[in-house]
Image 1 (tube, protein in one colour):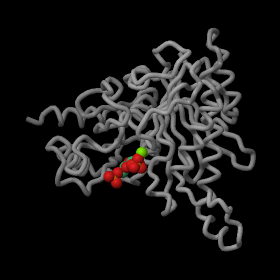
Image 2 (cartoon, rainbow, N blue to C red; image 1 turned 60 degrees about the vertical axis):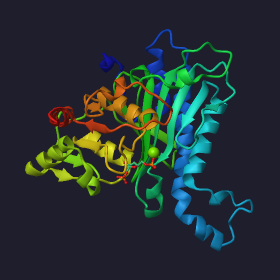
Image 3 (cartoon, helix red, strand yellow; image 1 turned 180 degrees about the vertical axis):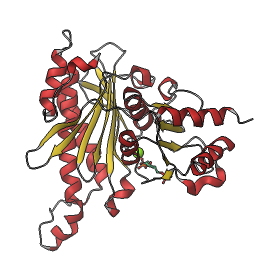
Image 4 (cartoon, protein in one colour; image 1 turned 90 degrees about the vertical axis):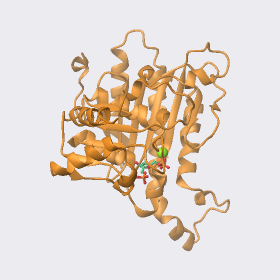
Length: 332
Ligand code: AHM
Ligand code: MG
């Protein structure tokens, strides 16, 4: 019962994390520290993103740094920032990141946690000033401490997540996360440099009238997906597709709806990655009362095969995801 843990709107993220920890008498505070590390890196990345449009202008007035550091692409910068924060924090032994083919060993062999992260998703949207996001997932390692984390530590099913969240760098910047006791959203106040609780105990609507899918690929949809999209149109749903996963997901979480990235001709296994895109959002949506599947089975039950594995995703309001699953089940 997470209602007894309710804290008022306006509580700072640090205080919120601290108070939640006090509710678990045996908690050592390591997960709390890890979440604070992620929030710190998010603030730094947020600053870089807000400056990104100014880089050329800064060059024009002679402010470009000589090493050319400010010319690195933002997804690379975000990757560096998050890895550095998690390494310095000390709680994480191993990281898998969309930006790195191999597992990253932080050198913190005593760290009890592994993190899967997409440091900056939707980065093709940066140049056109569209919202982008960070998505992360936290697992407790299963191998003994005192040595680097293992592939098995990283390849746990989504049901084993101990925390997951995302940061949306949008018209305001928000951090939304769960540790398995509901979902809470925090809005960043840049002039104070703090995240404040703005969306306590988020519940997603049971149904909705928004569908989000890249219909440019509709010629290659399976019959079940095509039937679902047709049903959405027959019901005069609104089509909303930003093309930035976190932004599409966040809108539907708050307003109701379904986001789909199915198998397509170009992406036969779907496009999105299980470990750092699908699973964290699936954990969050379930905690908010919604549902996520690959069309046939619950996302969180999928057995991960490699760190960068892709899978189709149907995620959002429970009734809509169930309707899509029912139509897929009728495929022959
Ligand atoms: P990325 O990880 O290379 O940025 O790709 C993921 C993005 C998601 O943010 C978005 O939902 C999806 O790709 C859009 O793909 P498409 O353009 O095929 O619809
Ligand atoms: Mg991505």
